[in-house]
Length: 125
Image 1 (cartoon, rainbow, N blue to C red):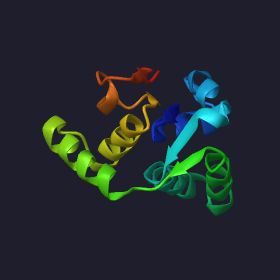
Image 2: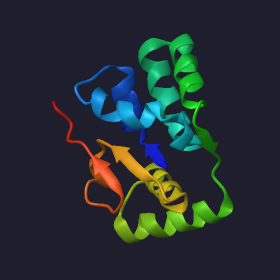
Image 3: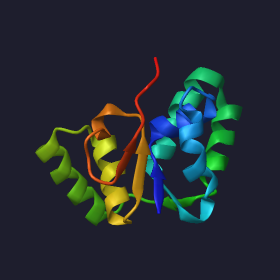
Image 4: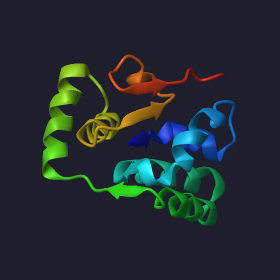
């Protein structure tokens, strides 16, 4: 299973320098899980930067994977993980969701840099 963090989706949608790094897991729809918090984050950024039509198109692509709702177990484990590792809420939910589903997390977000089961790509700024 694969989980692409919001930063990876945004990089892919904007055809950024690391877009190719995220293309493999994003195109393997059968193995792709998508936490609802990632949909929130991506929709919000695309809405702000490009408008509602583009934001809805982004969500339509994201929904091709298996959308994972935030449940009680993931919430509790993410809260513990957040406190223990000083990771922001959304990132801890994304990471915990990935771990719960035994997924590799693909990201360019520094908060995930040294975590287990993460494929991290440095931002090419």
